[in-house]
Structure formats: structure tokens, C-alpha cells
Image (tube, rainbow, N blue to C red; front, side, top):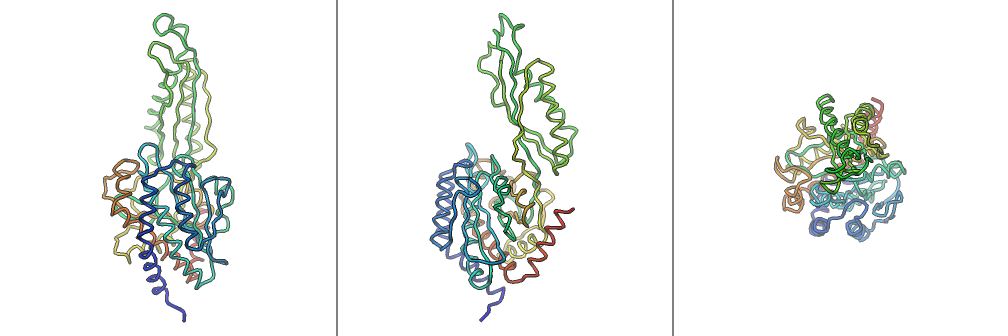
Length: 395
């Protein structure tokens, strides 16, 4: 006998509840053993082991990335994929809560097996490494990993309100070096070419530029090498800078202006400038209104208040933006901490291992699984999702 959509969703919730002890255990294991991008071997292994124990077929090393993988269950259409991130940040560990993203996606995937059993279609969990520092999904998108998927879903932990959509900027990294000439800073300063002066002139120029760029744009960075002895004219300096914008066109124009700041440092001091733009640029996130609406309704059934969008939401960047340009995507937010607990801090890292964090992870898994039920059970819903996607791509 065919069961109703409501009954399907109740069964999905029950499945996540049954998984809860093991999902919490894995989330805390990943949290206690933070690994940087492309080094997440333990985290990937723990998720893979869990999915294999639930009869998923796993393909490792996809897109040539050692900690990327795809787990599949079922066959046919639609194909819905849950995306898992599990990389940590230097020094502050899981201060973005990726331990919860991975386990929420895995829990949703295992629950959604029942949809593949009762309907035609396939469930996937795609392990996506190195979101923070390198943009692993960018490489995976370029390699066609997401091409045959009907929808890609993930939920990110957040402080403050639950939100169904994200505001994410295009972003690219600029690596710069100055080559000057060392000299004794007291005895023979005239013989030197000060590479640190070149960098500080450029840094000041970037600071001045910030006053005259669009409100949604960002330029920020660090000096990674500023010299080694106060009594030696620095002959070498290096830095890395991030340039962000609301769209790719403005990003391209802003890159020119930022690079001129570094050319100014070279021109003023005589130090030689060498630079490199990272070829992997994060694209702006394309939100899907239908997916966001479904996710909102499903989160509300769990007793959480949720906003479709938050005008006060801060700007960041995510490689999910690149995925959202290939396939309809959802990047929702589930609150695990009160407003004021800032991401990428030790306080947020603590929240990612707290009872509130684990509860948010389970609610995220339930909402993701229920949203998948909407897509599996009603073909018209998936059609609207695809229409939204095409409209967004062509706008």
C-alpha cells in the first residue's frame, strides 16, 4: 500500500532519531580530531564506514582528490545528493562546524534510503574536502562530479536565526611577493631596496581602496613574510589577499584595481613584484526559491522558527556557489548558538560540539531528508526546482 508524503516524512524523522547516537559519536570524533583541507583522512573514513555499514556503495578519490568520495544507494531518477564538508580551520579547529555538516548529510542520506526503496531514484552522499582554504567543490565541479544530479543539498550550522538561503560572495585569492635587495639597515641603507616598504605601501593602498568599492565587496589579507631581522633591509616579503564581490563581473574589475595597489608598491620602492591569482575562484551562491521554500516548511514542522532570508546575514564565500551554478542547490542554515557567537572563533568551535550543536545537526538531517521526500514524491515540485535554476542561471 502506498503511503502518504506525511507518513514518508514521519518515517524519515524516525530514521534520524534511530541514527542519533552514532551520528553524535561521529560528529564529536571529527570535532576532536580536526584536519585541514585535503588532509581529512580520518573524517572521510569515519563517514565512509558509516555509509558502507548502511549498504551504500562508495567510490573514493573522485575528481583526483584523495579525501573526496561519492556514496550511492538506489538507481534511476531523480538523483538527490547530500554534500558533506569535514575540513577544519588552522588553530581553531571546527570553528565553522563542518563536523556537523558531514554528519547531518550522512544521517539524511541513510534516512532517505527508504525513498529510493519506495520510489524510483538514487540517493547520494558526496564528500567534499577543503571548503575553507582551497575550494574542493570547485575542482569537483570542473571535473563533472555534479553534472548528473537533480539537486544538491546541504545545511551549515550558524549562530542567530535559522535561515533557508545564504548570501555568499564571489572570491579569489591573490598571492604576492616583492623582491628587493638586502643591506645593513644602519651602515648602508642606501644600498638596499626595501621589500617591506613595498608591501606596506601596497597594504595602505588597499586600505584606501576599500573606501571606494561596493558595499558588498571585500578586500583583506595578511603579510606572510615581512623580513627576519630589524637591522637588515628586508629583501623579500610575501602576502596573500582575498578579493570578494557580489558578482563575477565586478570581481574581475576589482581584481585590476587591487593589483594596481601592489604595482604601486613596486613602483615606489623599486622592488620587483611577482603575483599569482588562484585559478580556483569561488562563485556567488545561486539560491533556489523552491528548494528554500520546501526546506523552510520542513524546518518549521520540527518546531524551529526559520527565516526564508536574513537581510542582516553577514557575507562570506563558499564553494557551494560553484555547485549551485551547475545544479539546483540548497545551502540552508540551522542555528546552534545565539547571535553574537561569531563563526571561525573558538567560541563557535565549542558550539559545534555542544548539545545545541548536536541537536541542530539532527534537525538539519531531518529537514534535508524531508525536503528530498518532496522531490521524490512529487515530480512537479522537482520541475519547479529546475525552472528556478534555469531562471537564475539566465538572469
